[in-house]
Length: 295
Image: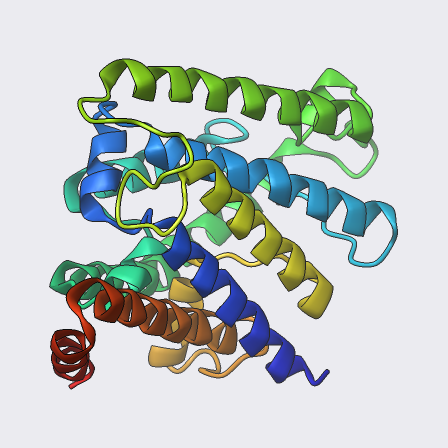
């Protein structure tokens, strides 16, 4: 399959899975960030457990070697950049009810707030590329110049949890799968205790078509299909930086792993949500709403 066709197919599958799971709802995301509902957590844990297995198999079989990302350091300690970035992302999700991926789904559903989040992400990508990246490169160069000497080579510190704990890949994967299952079970128990209406774990708690665990598994299967089709995993956050570089003239807009995957993902989510609206509201009313959203 041609690379662009593979990227489009992966984006369509991933977008369909995200829309089917229903975690794009701002109310669902805000409830999770306020720790009043754990639907989003269950979905993400299901996606992480199934997706991790797919990535591990692809790497183990040599089909698509996918290595862990290096720590993002600001100069204080190894993961300070990850901590700061995660805190900013969490605050943004609590305020807006959206994340880099679900904002695209909200745009597909006609929610105006999703468009503002996407625009804010592009502005953040521009600021990061223009201001933060040069400063970080300058800091790292000055640090590397004064930290080591040509005569002495220091031992590289561990950069992953696996290296720090000295665990084998299979053991770490098994531990993670067990942890995800236990966390999903704990969240399920919480949902049962706080449910105010007749409850069934197989029914969706929000606008999704399936329950949270099934939705997470669908996202994990979409990740597996992405690895199979493109030999890399899919992620939305990197698209904002790439699009910001394209806007500033420092990068191409159409790249094999960013534009087709994310835009096709957006289109697939949009069409699935519109189809669901037509089923819920009746064909004629849904048809009118569909034309209004598209226009």
